[in-house]
Length: 413
Image 1: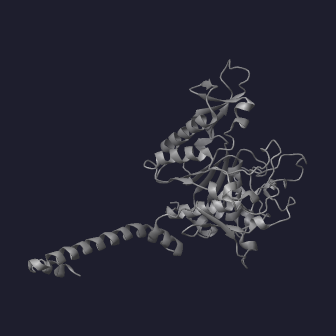
Image 2: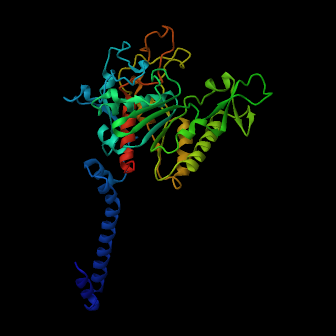
Image 3: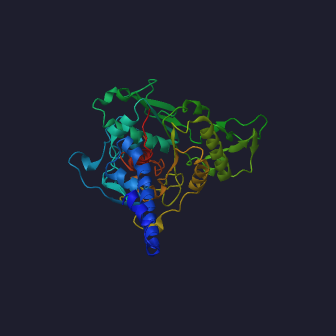
């Protein structure tokens, strides 16, 4: 219907007035729907993202990748078990090479995550690298964060014909390195970095004249001193949580400090909440909301059975993902704190995201190194039911990271 037809309705007798209003309403509704579609789709057209998955996401809004189920992976003629890389990847710590360390079963490699109501985009290393050209991708956190960093390094390297050209900028060896690593991809002029900061905030000596039982302190109101290195990054993936417990803090003489005063009554989770507010303040003050894509990854579940990590906990009998949801642990309390602080930031930094991997990871009791640790580990050493075999579960975290960046039209400038 054109404008002339609409106007002609107005000259009809009173009998047709109702019909006139109906046509006008339908016309306005059509305009509203069409304009909404254009607003949503044009940014995707700009960056060439209208593949089948991105178009479906455009029309159905953003997919909730955190909710779904694990399904058996179909084998692919182009890769072993449909995986993107193998244990020969030179960026893997020896402790994550479970098969090389004696694990006989390979079933833990044959699962993929299927979200409910949508599909997880296939990871495209070449596309991800191209989108990140001349940029920086930075992982900040504990050793589980290093797990994820190594996974992404191996996933990226599959798109590089000459893998030997990837190098550490400062000449540091990557195995067992506990501090700061910056791996450069020369063809893309890209660095993918890992910064080890288990608490995100400062850990230091206690104030003078502190009681003898106070060995160290976590300064919940002072952000990590390495943070100046992270300014200007294009993608930042933060994680913390595994050190935020009594066993690794107060029971070892590590208490919490605020305003240069030690507070021995401050609980771990109260301190955790305060540290997140310090992180939030740093992000809002120091990171460009138009440049930096900031993710805070949720808590990665552990799967110790019949005891904690230091009291004989085991996970070496687990061969498949959990199928009985009644046996799954409730959501970690850390996540509530993380989600809340990100919600507080959403209107001031539109590119801050909660990378929610806890639920999907809780199923994967089978994915840990367990007793298949690196050579030289004492026989009576605790099993590792915290970290992950690689290839393995962290690959899915990076697939979700890639999918979320696609939904944000990520591309370095």
